[in-house]
Image (cartoon, rainbow, N blue to C red; front, side, top):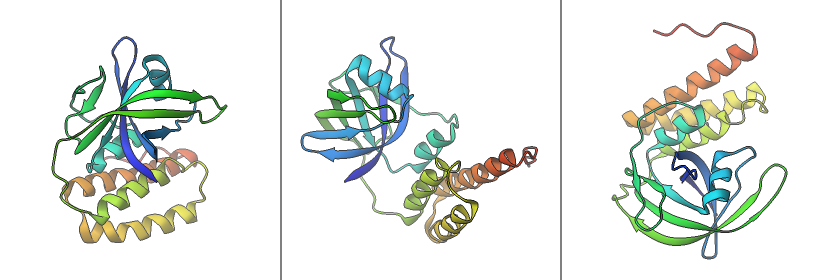
Length: 195
């Protein structure tokens, strides 16, 4: 099973890094497979620690995928010297057990050192899942044909229209802007005028 998470790490100098990442559940912890090059990979290799944050705020995942700068509050994790998301529902503090190198996607085997809950989970929301799926599509715009992206986005829009709150609606708008911007850039057109 792969859980969609936000992984927080730090450099040796203490600079925090926040990245969305699928964390594969394995016995005793997680398998992470960041693509090279990756600051998450570098930080985990250097410090041997990280935090897997579980959040239902899809704006964080969308912002990370899109390279958007939004305020994200962190604090030191409970037992390891690494930041965690203040707004996370829960987090797992991890230590690196071993790294199997690969030219494209190294495999980082991590053990869970500590798990902690923070906020109540208020239930499933289809719009959150739709934004998450759109973020995956956005990360692959360079390899997917337009008709597939259009069909997927049209289907996902149904869930957003029916179930989104303000946070999901904001993240969805970012996704739509990203598709439009990608196509304009690819086709050599100037950026769209902002209202």
